[in-house]
Image 1: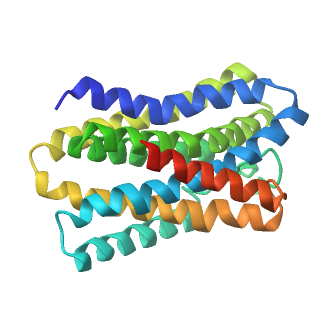
Image 2 (image 1 turned 30 degrees about the horizontal axis):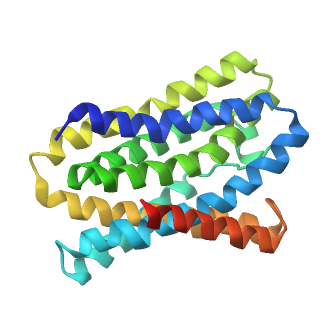
Image 3 (image 1 turned 45 degrees about the vertical axis):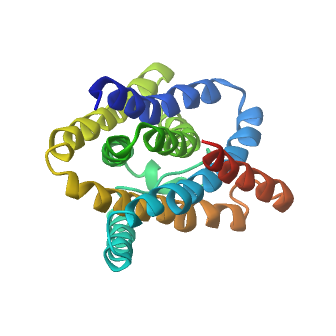
Length: 243
């Protein structure tokens, strides 16, 4: 397996989302608050599609269903626990972010933990096959864009300069490369771990999509146009099917 290719995909997942978010944050707030919620709907589709159409079928090819879905359940419970510890929850707009405003350090810590896991997930998928790694990286990038845009905006609201807010978030995004390196070091020598990693990652994707993003769409914290939400979610799923 080409380590550079795997690390490149991890960079796409963590740094690519940050770079796009930086462009969004530089836009006028009126434009940003219109575009970012659309990305939330698209991210829901990519995460659901990647989990249910890519990661789980691949894991089921190597493990019995009971182990796959048991690991999936463990993944969901793990990310629920992380959110309870305020290490995982992210905003997806500039508003209603009191969790982050309470302490800027939690924004950076939460991003670092999140991107570390994302990097490990991308590497695990790429170790199975590069196309699976690519679809996983794109799904993570789609989620990272609205998440990072919200986090950078919160840092700006807390009084940080644009450059400092960007570099703080970029430093946290570097956790994705560390996560990928860890998976490369251990995953290649323990191939039996990879199907479990894919199932665990599917739990991550499903939890983020259904417990974090979809409630925003229902409660009006993001785009309130139901028809547009459905079309963008379908577009995200179609992207995963096309790759």
